[in-house]
Every structure is written in structure tokens, then in C-alpha cells.
Image (cartoon, rainbow, N blue to C red; front, side):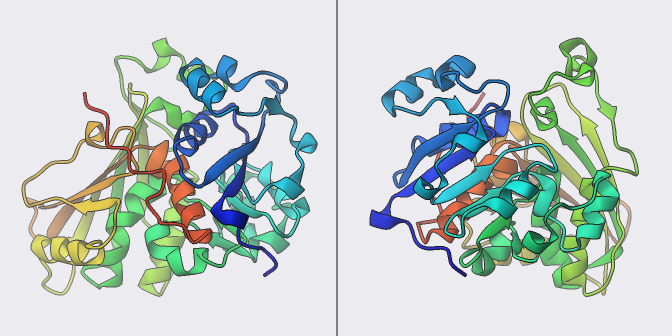
Length: 357
């Protein structure tokens, strides 16, 4: 690998796609990061504008930290960049990654490098993978499960928000043989920011407020992503049920996961397994018996809360998992991966506590 460590313990960062929600979250978190300097921010339609004009809530930070104006991606001096975050629509990061100088570490928040097999990406995203040679170098960036590989990775493909909320509770209990991997049902809800900032009829206030609706039923692109990771710990191909729902809230993911116990295991066994696996993790917390998580308990933070309940149906259990989709489900996890890759303390820039109410 030809990447080098940042000099003088400073990390020069480029935020590619800084005018979207995940771009704004990256900036919000990075301006308080003790080792990161934002040296470039790109946008398409908003190129040439001041970042504070695009996101007024960060105008003070933009002035205080002398953030550069938004610019086209082809105007960036990549020789002056150590780490590039890609907050782009699917398909856009692939050619960019292939053209990046070898010293730049890349952390992609899009789905472009999440699948081991480029053919799976092509099947679910309706277009051929444009950089299969880069996919061979990519590491799936679920930090708590890929930390050792991320340390030496040039390219990290960050998980989607639904997969992050689903995999953190599922992987330990599947790996431990405590549940039947072929009988997993994930019922998940997301805030509207998960749909991105681009104008869409389905994201209009009157289309979302005062109601809940399912979408991508039996066809959502995050299902095969979850399946690939569950299969990797199960040691065989796994299919599961996954249905997402849109909630009338800005932020948050709530995953209710219904599982069938295996080999005489109990809900207490699942909780004990999860608690042991995440005992030393700074951002994952397994709740005490009977305690219910809520999206408002993690809003604005990089935290994941997990609860386990025995189902009233014998032999079954319910896993509940909550994250902020823009932080632990996107930009926060991306910075967590940067910290690991750059040999910085993993919590750097991510110690913000949740906002409540």
C-alpha cells in the first residue's frame, strides 16, 4: 500500500459532496476535530458559494475555521489532501476513486464500495461497477467489526444507515450460533434525511407529515448489503426479511429485529453475548433488561443503543437498535473510520452527547 500517514499529526481533509446532508454533518463534526483540517469542499450546482450561505447553521463555524468555498471536484489540489470523504450519489465515487493519487485515503459514504462482488452492486443499483479494481482494495467500514482491516485500508466503503443499525445487534448473535440465521425479520424506520437533500416529491412535507409508509418492500438495496455481512459470520449464504418505513421526523433509525432462538438459547443469552462483544466499544451500548431505546436518545450523536426482549412467542426474541442515521449511520461512522485509518484516538471529534429533547 502506498498511502502515507498525515504529517505533524494533522489530517488534511477534503469533503466531496459537501452540499448534502452527510456533507454538512461531516463539516459539523470535523470543525471540532482536534487533528483535522478541512482544506477542500466540493459541490456541483453550488460550486463557488460560501459554505455558510448554503448551510447558515454552520456559518459561524465556516468563518471561525476559515473554511474554503465550495468548488468543482476537478479543481481540488489532491496533492494537498490526506483523506477524502465521498458524500456522493451512487456511481459517482467509482471513477473518482480510480483517479485518486495513491497517497490519498478514501472514505466513501455512498454504496459504491460496500459489496465484495461488483456484480451484486450492478444487480441492485442498475449499472455496472465502474471501478472493480478499486473494489478489490475496499474494506467494509462497520468500524466495530472491521477495525483491524481499516487500519491499513486505502479505501473504506462505509455501511448504509439501515445496515449499521441492523448489523451491530445481529452479527454477534449470528456468529455465536444463538439464533437461526434463516429466520430474521427486520422492520426498520428512518427519518426523512435518509432520503438525501435533493428535491423529491416523496420527501415533501405534505407527503411525509402525519403519516408513516413502507417503501422498497422486498426490494430495498440495503437488504443484500445486510445479507452479505450476516452471511460472512454465518459461514453460508443467508436470506432475510427487511422492510423499511419512512417516519415524519428529520433524523433517526429504529430497527426492530425479530429472531428465532437456536440450541436452547434465551433472550438473556443474546443480551449477555452482545454485552460481552461491545463491552469495550465507545459508541455501542447494550441496555439493561426492560429498558427501551428511542431515536431521541441518540439524536446528534455517534451512539448505538441495543435492547433485547424475550418475545411472547416461545423460542423467539426481539432486538431493538437505534442510531442517528446522519451520524453513526453516515458521517460519524466515516470519521470514526478516518480516526482508525490515521491512527488517531477513535473517539476524536465524536464525543458529542445526544440532543434532548
